[in-house]
Image (cartoon, rainbow, N blue to C red):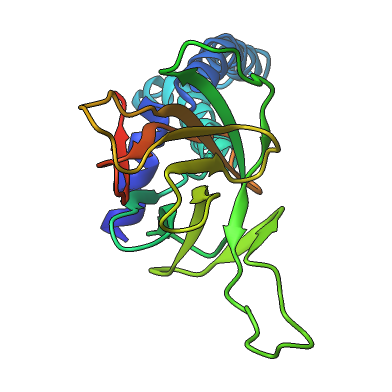
Length: 240
């Protein structure tokens, strides 16, 4: 019960403070009207004012206003998306963003956008749909499932899903290695796997926006993604 009141108080101070303020301003006028009506009723009924009346006149309308304001705060409470991010790239041919749900079960989708490229060439700036690692990948040769699936996925409490960010796009041992961004065509970077001299390794800067059904606010993170060394693996570093 105490936690419920604490959360409610946080909402009153935060998410609904303007709505509550508006209601209290309206309610203050309503309280004054009720006090006047009560006084007129006592006067017209020829009933002498008592000490109790001096308390009832202001307390009754203020109580009504407070109750209504509390009900409004409860109605206007907005859920907060409680998720945690971590990157996975060191031991795989792909780079993933792990999305862990620390709240209630959510249905969530991802919007990905390339916002930077170290090579200086142009790149596609339009956002595209994020691709989640398929948890139902089949080993059946005749009925293989795709590695990634797009759209909305469900994440239960204390569970996580992997969002594909980048993957290797060249054969191992080739003189030129290439990394491609997952979910969009023709966006990749290449580098020499056995350079004769030091080289500046390329990278993308990618912004990920998570959108959960029923949650008004989104979560957004930005990562620098590229090879860690000329022989790999990939590396993801958060850009603050």
